[in-house]
Length: 346
Image 1 (spheres, rainbow, N blue to C red):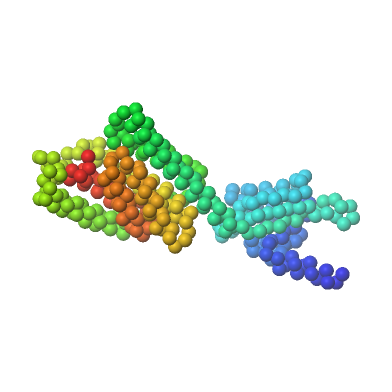
Image 2: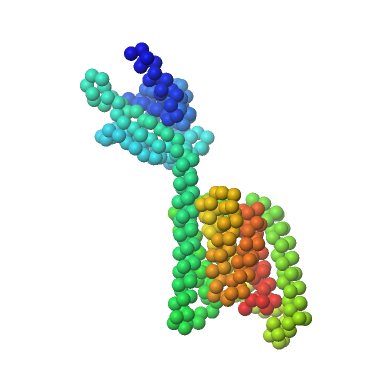
C-alpha cells in the first residue's frame, strides 16, 4: 500500500501529459507540472475557481472552444469528453491541445464529485495537418482553374469558335480571382505566406528594375540580329519599337501580370513547397509551377507557352529570395509589354 501511495503522485508528476482536476463548483483541486506549463498556471491557482484563474487574462475568442470544453466537462451529462481544441496563452502563443475529460467519482456514493482533464500538446501535428490541408485547398483551386480553362479551349475548338486571346486571358484572370477568394475564405494563409507583403521595397524594386532593363536590352539585341540575318521574320514596314499597342494592353496587362504571378507563385509554388518539405522541394515547386503556368498560355501558341515556362523557371530564384510577387510581377509586365512593342508577341 505504501508503494502505491508514493507511485501514483510520481506518475502524475512525471507523465508527459497535463492533468487538471476541478470539483463540481469549478474549483481547481489538482494540477501537475505539465498542466501548469501548458496553461501557464502558478501554484496559487490551486484552490481558486476556473473563472478566477482564466477569465481575467484569457478572454480572447481564441480560447472560447477550450473554455467551453471545460464547462461541458464540469456541468455536462456525458461522462467523457474528447476534443482537440486551441489554447492561446498569455504570451499569445497558440497551442493545440488534445483534451480528454472524465468525472471523478466519490468513494462512498460513487456519484460525480468533480472532473479530471488529461491534456496532450499536439501543436506540431495539428500545424502540419493544417498546412497540408491549406495546400490541398490551394492546389485543388489551381487544378480546377487550369482544367476548366483547357476544357473551354477544347470546346471552342470543337465548335470552331474563334475567341481573341485577350478575351481568353481575361477568362483565366477571372478564374484566378475566384480561386483567390476561396483561398482567403477556406485557409489560414497569411498575406506574408501568399507573397503579398513587401518587406524590403528598395531591394525588391531596384533589383527588378535592373533585371527588366537588362532583359529588354537583350530582346532588342535579338531583334537586331534577326533583322540582319533573317529579314523575313518580321513583317515589312514593322517599326523597330512600336509604342502604339493600345491603351487596353498597357492598362489591362498590369492586372494580368499580377494575377498570373499570384497563380504561379502564391498558389502553385507556395502550395507545392508546403507539401514537399525535402531538400528538392524548391526544384519540384519551380518545375511544376512552370508547367502549369505554361499550360495557361497554350492558347497563344507553342513558342509563347515555352517562353512563359522558361521565364517562370528563371525567375524562381528571385521569388525565393524576395518572397513576394511584386518584384517578379514587375519583370513580367515589362517583358510582356516590351515583347509587344518589339513585335515578338501579337
